Image (cartoon, rainbow, N blue to C red; front, side, top):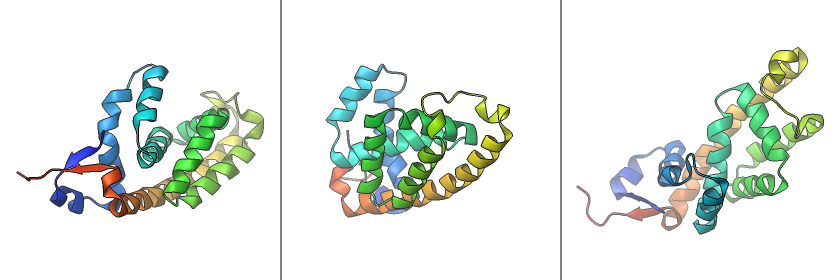
Length: 168
């Protein structure tokens, strides 16, 4: 399940792009699949790939809007195993800024964990302003995390990449 690529492609990718490139082969295996299939794929990954999986499954959805950030964070926080795996993944990559932000967000949303719903931000101006500020910080922290992920992949490429012997 490692990303196949040539050394020149690997070297040419920006650190911020490398994680997404390495996660790309997993996407067709999990997109629109039942949870049982997603769990099977997850279990088949290396520890580094699992960390990358958790980062992308969370961030790739949460980054689209403050509403998605709010809902995804509340959703993950309501699932102790998923929350722990997300944190474990962030720690693998040294993304402590994002991990701390998520903890602060979870604490701030404690009364909404498990009850978050689409439209909550439209109905509550104070909540919307608060989540909007956290979302802006989330965008900065997740960009920093993407760079850290790239550096970690460069330090341990064999966990994520299968280099092609001969480049075209």
